[in-house]
Length: 240
Image 1 (cartoon, rainbow, N blue to C red):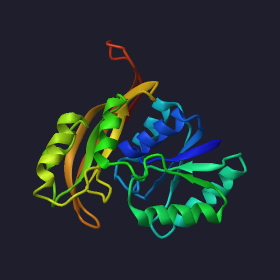
Image 2 (image 1 turned 90 degrees about the vertical axis):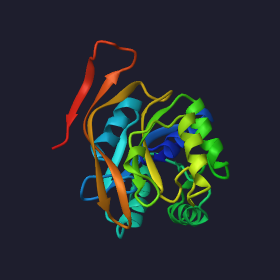
Image 3 (image 1 turned 180 degrees about the vertical axis):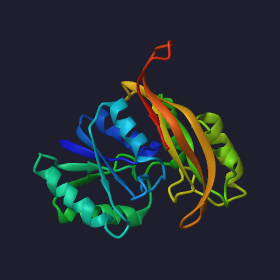
Image 4 (image 1 turned 180 degrees about the horizontal axis):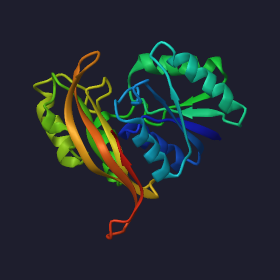
């Protein structure tokens, strides 16, 4: 089956892509929607970093600007366009939020495309551990300010991160995988990546939207060949 992947740049959509490809599905594109401020709709990271991931993974990116009001219409019209290219399904990284599964099922059904949910029903700790054990490298780029301090930004998603989350979860009510937006991640490298992303400069900023959140504002990065020690990079980015 030829599919596209709904791509946020974070661990869940990345693991969903990985599991889809391991199951034999053929992925034609990554599908990502950004705001007018040129940031990813859900994670707040710069849209150009999402494009850098596409380059590193070597899967073409379809990226469209939307608002929350126009998101559903744009999503459906994009799927209609992709169907003309032979797309039969869309891979999502949902784990257990029923409302989003219902939305995905309805929207895909309205355009006669099959929704695929490789992570659905998994235990959230198992999702984290499978992501780590597969060899992916990711960092925290966004956290709710009422749950986490800015010291959580730029933390690597590893086993110590999982244990720290479990330790504080008893004192604060949140989902271990951040399914309700408690935190967001950015994948930099892994088994799907032909090249890797290296962050050169970033800053921690406090912002306010639906809630207050700490954002790792990534200012400079590069896409480099894997295994090189000479600092050679493929593409260099600066965000002004």
